Amino acid sequence: MSSSRGRITDGQQAPAGRGHAAHFAGDGPPPAWKAADAVTAAYEAFPSWSASAPSERSAVLMHAAQLLMLRTGRIVQTMAAETGAAGPWSAFNAKLAAQFLLDAAAAAVRPGGQVMPASSEGSCSLQVRVPLGVIAALTPRHAPLLMAARAVALPLALGNAVVLKPGQTAPLAGGLLLREVLIDAGLPDDVLTVVTHDPDDADELGRALVADRRVRAVTFTGSAAAGREVAMAAARHLKPALIEVGGKNSLLVLGDADVEYAADAAVVSSFLDAGQGCLSTERIFVDRALADGFLARLTDKVARAEKTGPTWPAEVTGAMSDPRAARRVAALVADALAKGATAVTGTGRLEENTASLAPVVLTDVTADMDIWSQEVAGPVVTVHAVDSTDEAVALAGTPPCGPTAGVITRDWAAGLDVARRLPARAVHVNNRAADPVQAPFGHITDSGYGPQAGLMGIEYFTETRWITAGVFGRPDFPL
Image: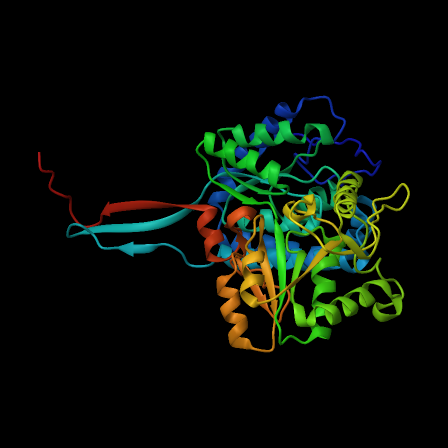
């Protein structure tokens, strides 16, 4: 396939790379043609890549991780230009993306399969795992590099080819930069293809990728509405789909908690990257006896710059990556305030002509407000006083539940008990969501299904084959 260069909508030029890089926003072909073109390139590259030695694939990914870290400065600049992300958050994206590549490099050479009992003398019976083929990865606009690396690293390590569709507002940081790094590290042309698009073409392009018979599996991270559409489309075409759609993550502050520590945990978990991540805390349930003290400390940490550094909130939150998403968050806050909620800090109003929204802490939120049952995905958290741990656990289980939760307590046994009762894939007791990349993190209940990492991820991106062979002599056939 030949290289295709073009103009990104924000005026930035994509890295040239080699081979079939992408179709850029503004190109002539309709979305279905773009999808077919990208899948064709990956489909034709798959046989040789899947037949390559695991050690070769591992070496490519290790080299790519090194290059990624060396280009952190460029990544920070690109994410700031595309998404408004703060420098520390962008640098963290580069660091964690490199870790995903390194873990995948180890997975490439990890032993797999087993020798099964043979049914007859002189026979050999094997269970082996082989790559699926072409994987379609649909990633979001927030944490674009991190999410893209996680989506492609393990499938590539296991011998698959990948078609990556990054969020439309971050085509460089969410795809083209990563592809350039992998190509420079030795990945063959077209094993990873990146297809970009205009915002209006997102749905049609996604449907075309899922419907293509050459695509063997799909991974999706994004909104709940789009995730359901992808899941239903994949089911119609009888192919597996790994779906991550966020939800409302909860932090529980039990009656014996250290209030100062709980407030620190709440600030980071609620407002890092402007609260856009699928791991961000959206609702806090705090024991009523501690509620006033906790709320005072939380709002003080958010509102007073000297408590957290001279560049707060820019270094911690950054701007939201999409003005449309920012307007949606502002509307959720406005609806809550109109129905009786109290803004303890923040107004929920956007800065003029920007996607910047100062952190908002709401109380007096009730079930008739949109924010109670809708994912916010922005720098807004609601605080609820509760009378017991049981009440906190019950409210944290109110749909839509998120993939993760936190518990703050001085009682380790009580924390473990609460963790087992919460409907979340990952629960952090007196800790934050900083899992090692090999952890089997994924989504359950309302937030989706399927893990992308660890042994469960290896199982998802490969399939089991059963092979038998008559090693000594020939079997007797009964007829």
